[in-house]
Length: 82
Image (cartoon, rainbow, N blue to C red; front, side):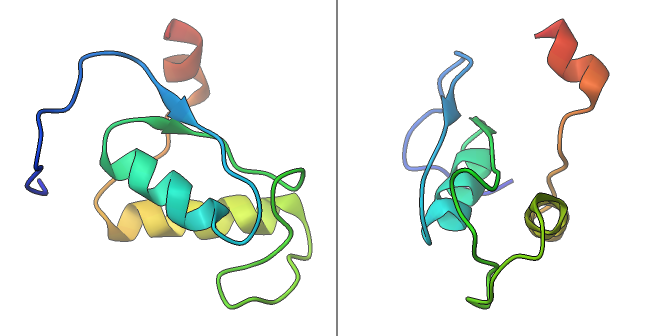
């Protein structure tokens, strides 16, 4: 668990970002307990600055980032339960 400078709220919240900083914004949201949505309509670039070949590549990249940080994406059943 990462130390926080504040107490996370017990509310459901999400973030949506656009452009090259999308990945950083959604990663921070995930670390702070929020929900994040990523996709082609918001960003076309991979972490290395190259053009994403498709939306699935952006999702795979984010899932790998979550894994490295000890997080995981919600399952479809978990999202439906929200």
